[in-house]
Length: 536
Image 1 (cartoon, rainbow, N blue to C red):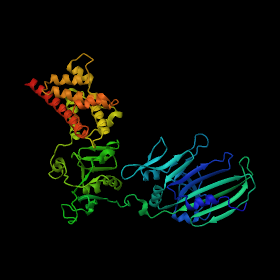
Image 2 (image 1 turned 60 degrees about the vertical axis):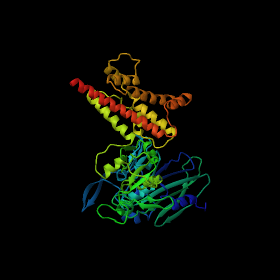
Image 3 (image 1 turned 135 degrees about the vertical axis):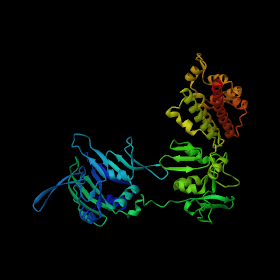
Image 4 (image 1 turned 45 degrees about the horizontal axis):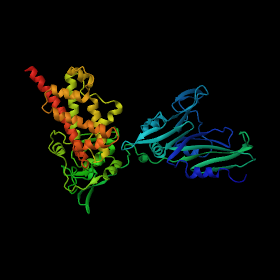
């Protein structure tokens, strides 16, 4: 055979291997009497040993070995035994194939230093190793299969730069032929060295083989390119609309170092506390995921970032320009920019003004925030006084109903349905029927949730019993006729009877929230009054 049997593989080695998004650092294809078999492996090599290693195609270490141990040497005729943490000296294995010589099944380990350097999480279900980017999104870094390991190039190059070691990508590929072949070749240059030779095949049904054996060199970059503290990439800052009109919007970077402040910095620039306004829908993705925590004046992603914001206005969300740059990762800024509004007469909420500029404690204005605070208040009050909760805690799989409960972000039917369902789950469906029945000394087990709450209000002599009773029944009616079941004439009748404006679902749902909030206040106030009356 005069033609090189590995032209395609050499082309892959020269142009792609080590340059792909996913770099193959280990692969084992056993023969199993097929027309090919092969192995890929890798090791980091010190700069001092790189040139020497590239002078020969043979591998510098073997798969299955590696690790600490003793080494014997002689000095001045005397035998010396030394313990080494790495017997491969100037080489560092990224992949360790643990071999138990048939006593137990082999398995693959990833170099601990690499895992710790990138703080990788091991997903045992998939075998993958995960990192998190600047916004907290998961990034798969290592894919581990039974006979193959791939590493994301950016993370591999980062480790090489930090370690200031080069990477050797070892390869061995054997191809079997039914005809006699006898091809040989030797190539050696700065980045690729290999040898090709032939022989008698050991695969059933084949006469001969050709094998290519060698290594490819990937040079490490400077340590400043590792992208890890203190060499992180410079943060990018987006421009946001802070004034002007639709034809000529005034925009400015949210880079906090370029903004004016109360200490005289950048006097010609907008102030750090310039409000930037956004459509309320910007919050939709955060309410849709348990990764985020949304509270009155705060949005955060656990372990990633934390943003101060004004979410108390009914028609928009606002954030101070400097906080956008300081608190939001670059990728998250791009997302927020897509919801940016013209100021156009918009203002921050009274809550935000009192807290941010006057330094006052000030209650939330948003019905959603107010409801959650009052719900916590009544739960704490009731538990402290009676040692049981008026509303049962949600199960773990239902906790998302509480987390996602809010004043509506849109006027969509789907959001209205979802919020009514959440409100019902948290309150009416969660009334502590057993304890409340005992508390009221009611033995009739047919009396449940709403009727028990009515009985509690009656016992407390609430002057608003009819209105609060109607509120509970109205919410339950909307849920039962249109949210929990197919919508039909009964739902339309309910909407008509309750005078719900289907063009302004957001305001109608706020009315439900405020009604429930008043119910909580009424129960706590009357219960406390009744206790004070008894003491008197």
